[in-house]
Length: 107
View 1 (cartoon, rainbow, N blue to C red):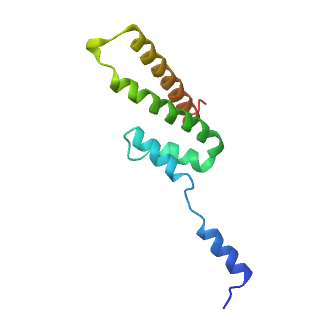
View 2 (cartoon, rainbow, N blue to C red):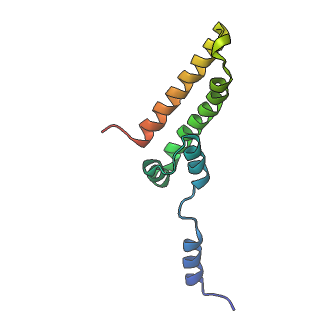
């Protein structure tokens, strides 16, 4: 038995996921130690083409900064370590500003 085309289109519409970018959303929540971020979820539903590139650049900056932050031993701090640390930290700050600028736009 086959369904009529009208019913098939309704079934396909309901079969689509209600939140398409849940993997990216969950990864960002895990990185920021959050359980929910309603504004980010809303922006991903409304305009993912704006949020996704900024979100991925923030995720990349965070993943690059974490090993540097945890690797540095303060008792053996060198000028090279300091340069790398502050470079990665500044990249993370810029990426975070970009992400928050997209999620919470200024009026």
